[in-house]
Length: 451
Image (tube, rainbow, N blue to C red; front, side, top):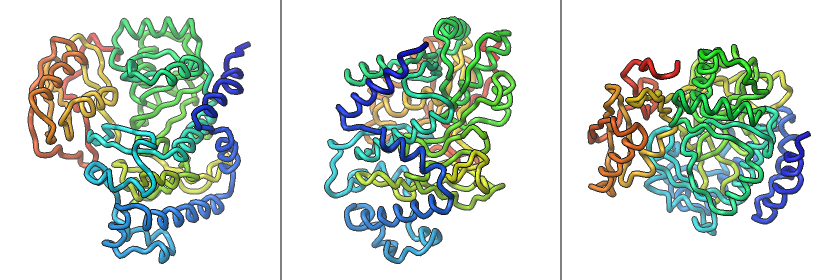
């Protein structure tokens, strides 16, 4: 019997959350009940919360005071969803250029939780969550984890990049006690590391696998191609990228219908998640108001989200940069939460190192965008097995040190045999669907790469 999970759930996690003012237990219990409310009741709560948020930002937030005044929008005149169109959508460039004005009166960056992301557009974004928003988002993630049968403290395996990220000491101690996981760095998905990971899985025997959608797919392909049939999971949680239908079919052919896809972004945390009915993605409607502009059940529209919880740095009608369809009706699972049908975008090509290793685009996005000074936007195009083109939109901080850093990063990620060329561009064009693609691969998979 595994005694560690109840110890973590009942002792370690509650103590840690109380110690740092991050309690989620009561919020989680409330969310577990509210998810089964009727769609009408959930929508009414959303609308009430939206009205209160708009009233708050109209008087207490410098950015929205100006934006509402310029648009001629008054929260008191809000009658229905169509009236929201009077509020211009919030873009990533708005956050980058006006971030200080987005901090509400009475709040400061020092008193909130800092988030920094390259985002699916490859543009660095700095933002902040107030404590109530941080706690609420943590509870939402736990609720959706539970749909897949996972609780923090359970054993699990993770396919992720940047696994050497350094955390504060208190977080490292907490993770050592509660985050019982083994990692496969998605920057190192070569034959040797995959084989070693399989051996570790056999010893550790985690019931859940969590990771980037494409990385979960490639690992599944590796198991199939190598004839490895003793690795099983009760649930697979895929995130960070769009899971393509063909990839899902391969994963389910190997593991069964145990795949729980989820959709989110660093700016908002979890937006929508798949339940045990595997029919669309339930929106975390208690804390988010999601619009799909121009979309319906068949045609995808632009995803625009209002964060109902974060008053410290409110995001009102924030355009995430993805497209999605709407799932009609109520899910057979019984939950009343609204659903997205399918999310489009977020696809990043797999690149290859000269030695044949696969490099997941999402794994290196932040490495080339956030950690290199002066990069406003970036795109990597691989036009030969041993050559990549770095398309760079420069910011004011770009200089010789940035060029050197890029060269060192290419060598570290792809190996010393990889050559690179930097192209300075004014802008990086989106795809025909309006999405930015961070990595583009123009070479065929080398024979040494796993299928």
